[in-house]
Amino acid sequence: MTSQYSAELDQLHSAIYNPEISENEAREHLLRCCLDGLKIQQVGLWQYTDYDLLRCELLLDKDNGISKEALLIDRWSFPGYFAALDKKKVVRASDAQNDPATKDLSDLFLKPFNIKSLLDVPIYHGDKLSGIICCEQTAVIKRWTEEEVAFVEALADVYRSRFS
Image 1 (cartoon, helix red, strand yellow):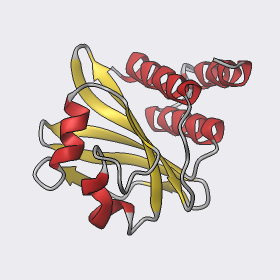
Image 2 (cartoon, one colour):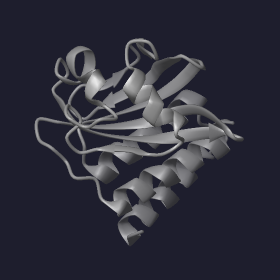
Image 3 (cartoon, helix red, strand yellow):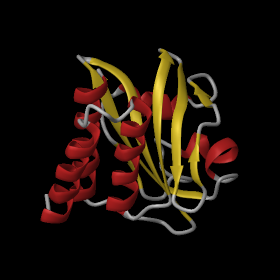
């Protein structure tokens, strides 16, 4: 991992483990670190409410700030996407509207929000998948690098250690 990402992770640790910071502020710091580090349009924190439903707990947009609008996606409407998440792997979709793992999100999620590329990194609580960090690039396709994936995986580990 480059020194840029390492420095961002060090700053994040200092910020979110400060005893005077609230959980919401810590989550916002983590998402801001991801947004700024990857230079993307949006990043969201999604949590499983149960096995079949993901809820966006917090969405940070580079231009529009923070949204706490309750976005939900369910297994029945998006079976291909949930199948990819069930494999407990990173979903790296540079062309999200055509990628087999994410194309069923196209009509109801990707196209309306002009999302071209997705990088979804799992968050585990023990062995159980509890949520994802969802990185989104709009307007242009983004080719996710191994280093970017490793950075978001490190952020997911920070999230797990701070909030589990």
